[in-house]
Amino acid sequence: MPPAALIRSAAPALLAALLLAAGCTRFDPARARRDHTAAFTSNLAARVEAELSRPLSLDDCLRIAISNNYAVRKADLDRELYRIGKNVAFTAFLPNVAVSAGYNVYEKEMPQQHERRFGTADLTAGMPVFMPSTWFLYAAARHGYAAAGVAARYVRQTIVLQTSVRYYNVLVQLDTITALETQLEAARQTADRVGGLADEGLAARWEGDQARMAADLRESELNQARRQLAVLRGELLHDLGLPPDAPLELSGDTGEPRLPQGDLEDLVLQALEVHPELALADRQVVIQDHQVRQAFCDFLPTISLFSTGTWTGNDLAAHAENWVSGFHGAWTLFDGLANVARYRAAKVERQQTRLERENTFLSVMVGVVAADAAVRDAAETARIRRRAYDVAAAKWADYDAKAREGLLPLSDALDARAAMDLAQVAMVRSRYQERIAIANLELAMGLTLLPQENSERE
Image (cartoon, rainbow, N blue to C red; front, side, top):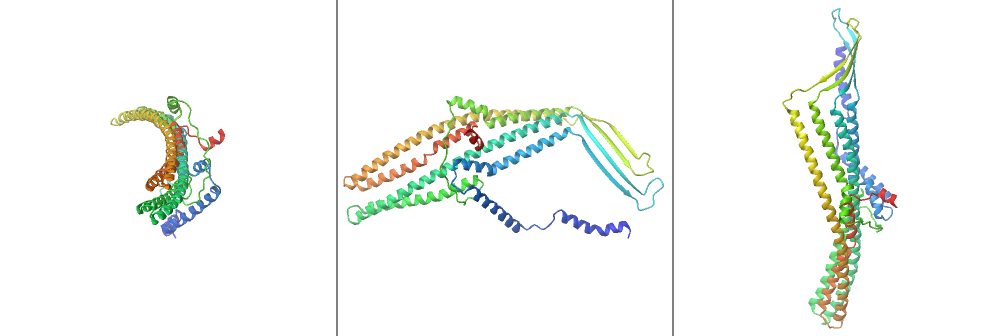
């Protein structure tokens, strides 16, 4: 069989083999979903077994979140992409080498000046000599990689704050449920007592209904609080990279809060020195400066060195081996003023970046002021709510004693009891607000410590 006919007959089989090797198989969405669900569920079960074998402190939750949280892992991958981009930009300084080879076969009889079968090969090498835009491109890539590192740390600080807040929220909800359980038990006892008095004619029927309604209200609030606890636990587990239905237990160990020292002016100045958002803004300004310089390079010529070698097995060729070397230069004299427009646009973008940095500067300042005010407000609110509960408890004790002696209407004592219960819940919910406010102040100043830094400090 002639070679051409052999190739034509083998072409379909060769194409099928290539398609099969390339992975062009049928995709089954249902099976792919089942496989991923099974694999991911197994992975989550292993994490739960490893991480939730004991009650977790706040530091334990922060450590798990830093390792498993989606935002943290994505920030690390983004930083890796910037590192690869920086390395790619560096390759502009390296020589380019390309090799090609071929083999020629002529089936028909050719004139005497040609060989029927011979091979060819080419080797080309090039090296930029004067191409300043590559320097600015690489410098921008280096600053982009550094900025990605700052951003990854800031993401970790944000996750530390978010996880801390949700840890405190779960503790608050647990304390709220405990208070509501106590209130429900007391409300049921009161309802039984007042209902008995109403049956004996010693209290109005509506007063008995009021007592039962108070017990029903406490039961409804308790059920809602338990459902909300499941939601809050699920949110915390999501931050930890764990399934929301995992059996989470908290030890309640939160450590001692670290309130930044100094007056408001000192706090603002400290934030302006170390805040990650300002560090990122500084990097963006430098990157844009390099973009302007890179746009200016469009006006300059570029020069490169090249060398090319060719080989052939054709014995009748004039030269079987050839080398060509030299310099290559290019200078764009006129491109419709597009390079001028790009240069002006780069300068405007640099002004935008500087304006954004100024806005970030002011935002950091006002953020510190607001966070400092929130810390003071939380401390005062916690004190006031504690006093409000003490007053409401004393009032209810007095009204209950007088109502038992018939000196006050029973409804007044029930109203006092309801007011005391509300004051107790408000006091419980304000218990961790100051710690949450301090954590927000630390992030507003860029001072949030990561779990590794906490262990080193201890």
